[in-house]
Image 1 (cartoon, helix red, strand yellow):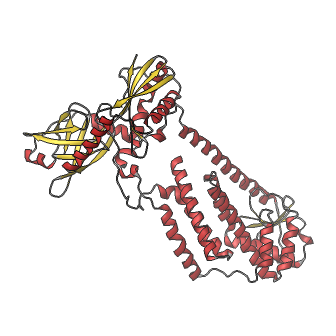
Image 2: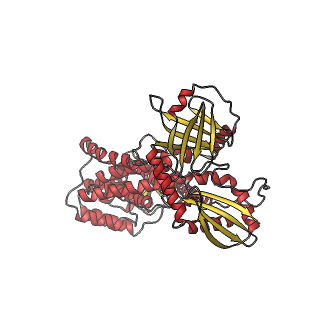
Image 3: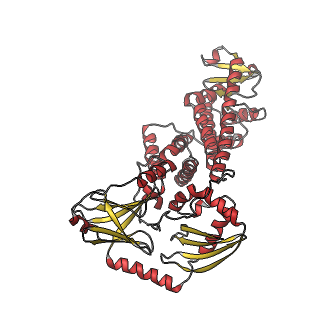
Length: 536
């Protein structure tokens, strides 16, 4: 959930900034228009956690990158079999800690908000109803616990000294608070406060709440000035209330000190009253805000989204896939001529190519740096290995010729795009050069050291791994923790060369043993392959 909240907060912040810049460029000052714009922005922000996880609006990705994933058992991260289960305390996960901190703060803010509403509700119930001609049938009540006029729900709460007000002051107060009620400002501010609690870590959520509070007061100020017709007198009334303003648990105080000086300055400097909203103004606001909101929701699929079958699966789905991939397969008879459609080369990673060949009525698949294995048909398009728990599915065009394949292994499903022989030879030549040069990939030693140190501290650096490697690593953490605990502290790491699949090979010396470590870095610098072989 926390990643969704974080992404929603970022998208909401971008939306707020873009809209703010647009309003500044257009020099919009009408509080009615501004309030309409920010109310729509608030609605988008509250819905953003649901919208970002709804894949209906997407933009096509520019490229597709296939990360490195070898065919082996297990696929990427290896530890000795037969180790006893980890009996130590659970591994600390910063995501869990972050989610806990977020939940505590958000819950506190929400409890404080609704606790304030409950207290103000009790204050409202204990207040004395005022049934005089100037209330015009409104729900107006007096309470000794308020110092300035306050609106709560549809009730206007006045201080007990209200009989001392003159007629102008009374009309200004009623006009101001009645405007809050008719505009539904209490409910808008409640939603803004909920948005602030949900995105409490975002300064834009706090700014949006303050901006909406200010505009609610500015609109009601305009309504009051229209009734009494005297700007200077109304400013004096506000300033007089400002010296008495206290804090009400929940509600809209007429002269809150946070916006008072800004409101008084606006009252005294504005030459005309703000125009009311009509259908044309609303149409213009909607036409401007809705496309910006849609743009904030739209997503360009990342590499993980392009490859979501392999990288965006949850643990339960991964386990289900692994169970399905490991079940016993039955070979079926197919027309041998179909096999010709699958013969060719398929790019799985930077240096990894599946070479699919046919010998008689049998199909063979060989991944770069590994032996060739026969694959057996379980359908006309899906084949399985007997050497490992893995399968290959071929993707075909309308003519039946394969355009790609999918490797099903270890709960993952990795696509490989068909390439021609020249491209396959070029990949092989680049791999051969890397092996011949025997030069480590820049940054691989530092990345390996960070991973080992993170494992020793029981805080795996999943963020520095590709999604595929992270998926494969998690279930093996107990055994990895135990093995590193047995090896003791890391003493040195030395480069030993480049392996047959292009992996950098290192020897890591520990206090109580050694490990031959193979590591492969993806183009973006993340660790896409990691293999440990233990020794005494």
